[in-house]
Amino acid sequence: MNWEKFLAPYAQAVEELKTKLNGMRIQFENESQHSPIESVIGRVKPIRSILEKAKMKNVPLNQVEEELQDIGGIRIVCHFVDDIYTVVNLICARHDFTVIEEKDYIQKNKESGYRSYHIIINYPVETIHGVKLVQVEIQIRTLAMNFWAVNEHSLNYKYKGAIPLEIKSKLKRAAEAAFKLDEEMSMIKNEILEAQQMFNRSEREEGLY
Ligand code: 0O2
Image (cartoon, rainbow, N blue to C red; front, side, top):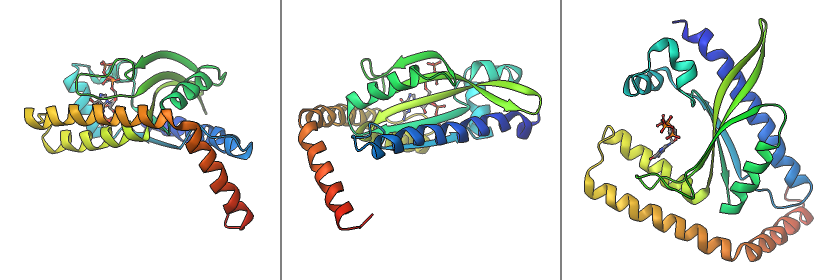
């Protein structure tokens, strides 16, 4: 397996998508609306993680391209839960890639307590041999969901996927608390947006940015 050659179109897709999605964020900011996108990051799954996941799912190496949907990964973080659905609609309306699957782990969270909205797309990468379609997983979540997921991911790494039951149940409680925080923040969303706009205006007037 020539990993460098195999992963190159994924790296290109991730870079192009980061630019495009950050473009959406900047456009919202320039038009002085609240941006539903707080930040965009992306990564290509490390070879070691691809091999581990393929082994765990019983996927032969010659099928990882079809079977592993998150070799290319984008993560969009939002302030509020309804921002997630705004971003989902914007992504589904685009013409530069095709949405092939949507997984709503917000309405129905995973057993671990994990919440996020996942969209799997087929992204066309222009190569010297023509167009190559690669699958990319776009994860969309709030700051609170992200805080939980990043911490749970670290614990999974520490305990090699076997988090002790007591910690697991504390994590589930923490996931519910994070979701409660999202719900409470949604209730005062307009107040927060007004405050952010006032703050941005005064920063601009003072020439701070
Ligand atoms: P990493 O290290 O983040 O890349 P499926 O066959 O669809 O059930 P699949 O392909 O794993 O399973 O898809 P799924 O469940 O949508 O999850 C894909 C990614 O979502 C994971 O990739 C994680 O990034 C994230 N994710 C899913 N469940 C959890 C969870 O319980 N906790 C956290 N922290 N993240 C989760 P990887 O390859 O597992 O991990």
